[in-house]
Image 1 (cartoon, helix red, strand yellow):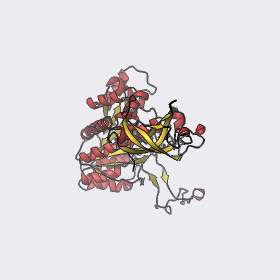
Image 2 (image 1 turned 180 degrees about the horizontal axis):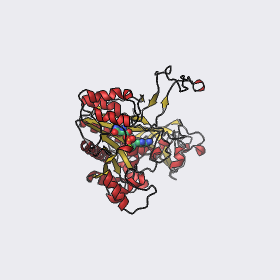
Image 3 (image 1 turned 60 degrees about the vertical axis):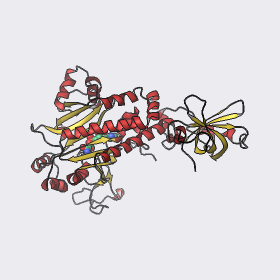
Image 4 (image 1 turned 90 degrees about the vertical axis):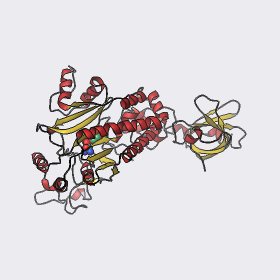
Length: 465
Ligand code: 4AD
Ligand code: MG
């Protein structure tokens, strides 16, 4: 049995106890007095533990002195209090077993201490060994556990919605097709269109862009539900905040209006930010030091502030009156771009802001029509430093209004018959939203590019591994 570096450094073992730790060498330093210092990490926390290795060990000359970054080892010895600054405990090694050597250490891609984040992106299989990716991974895990815990505590059920689907929830036509057809010999119908009737599902199928439509069916029975899974968008957006495969958290609540959804979003974000500050202090301190100066303070102020709320129409006025020259001109009806969103959150409100009631023409078919006939009960949550991280709405629960929207948008009623049934049989007002999980991790860590906060990013021309 062996123990984790995290437990050792946190003082969960007694001084004087014999312990074994297994991990990888980060650095080796040799003193003139014939002692070597090994920094060993195992991913359980930010800091490595130091092992002090005396030259009396019988493999000292032929093995210890050949250890390089990346070698895997098992170290047994006495736990002692450390004299060194910034570390609590260290191991006085009695035995160091080399488990795996690093071939040709000079060409080991992770050998040097600091690499640019762009360089690391070329090595998605080795970058988890670095400080920065290790820290991101633990923060990402902490956030996802905290989200599940939040919803569990609030009485929500986690629903597994399908990844393969026939419906385009957002209606943006950005779906990846799933098919077993032979592309070289696509079967055609009489009018020349591809004939999917002999395809695996007997019709066109896609990777889902959102679990929302499916999770609505469960909200209309179990009241408070959420889905948390991968979603896919064939957007041609080569940006630092878009992925072709990303994870989304989508709560859906019955008997709830747009304000209820906004309130839930605020509670949820504050809850998970608090969790990460409590549970991953070590990693957050690293981000504050190396990646984003105010990484910690901005989460603290996020938690302590009330979110601002503004109507889309007023937000557009604010942008126009700002006198700012934006790259994309501002007028009522536009889909705000990130420069607009960031102006609102960072410069005008200086706080997270919920923008509500967007023009219907830029929003999906399922959003509830407002009295004015021009806007829908939609909301986006904009965060300073990143822009939109949440998009949501109250859903159209009135069958006649929904049907009018479907035909206005040239969507086929039959394709949505099951969705319409929810409005035919005991319909209720209901609302929900989607939180881009990878955007959340980007925001919390202060990383510049969303491709660095997901283990294996997928983007246009990027599907390695
Ligand atoms: O605003 P979106 O498109 O909303 C929906 O999909 C709704 N069906 C959600 C719902 O009401 N249940 O996406 C929601 C969030 C965005 O705010 C953004 O954070 C993230 O998903 N997102 C992306 N994240 C990474 N890469 C992309 N390509 C993303 N597209 C959206
Ligand atoms: Mg959106």
